[in-house]
Image 1 (cartoon, helix red, strand yellow):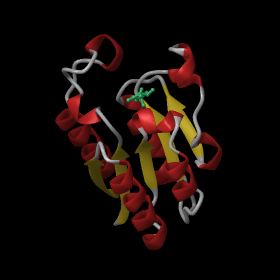
Image 2 (image 1 turned 30 degrees about the vertical axis):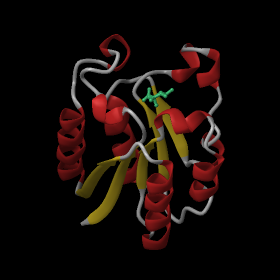
Image 3 (image 1 turned 180 degrees about the vertical axis):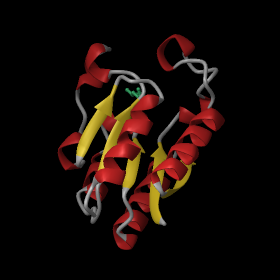
Length: 144
Ligand code: DQA
């Protein structure tokens, strides 16, 4: 079965209690279950991870590049400023879909810039946890 990494950046482990008006009531465990279940339906072996640490996230992107593993990535706040993450994603060897639960373009000005979007395969934002489902479908349908 084709492996896919679903990688989540800072503060996403706090889904459910974190600003529920923006991110909804479902927890990170709910998100992980949804991704694994969607993976089963699509024939993908989905592994879900979260970190608040930029170095750890960069290491996971290197691991994906070395293993030619497709990635669904919610970079969270790293989206808006992490050139280290951007440079790691530029080395990708398989599709990488940037996802966001909210629509950052409809929020504060600093969220309107993504420093990673230009090196991702594409971006899905604003559909709540369904953004991840759509991204997994896009990866399932991709040729690689
Ligand atoms: C987010 C949007 C980012 O602006 C924010 O920093 C997050 C979550 C989202 O999923 O909507 O942590 O990536």
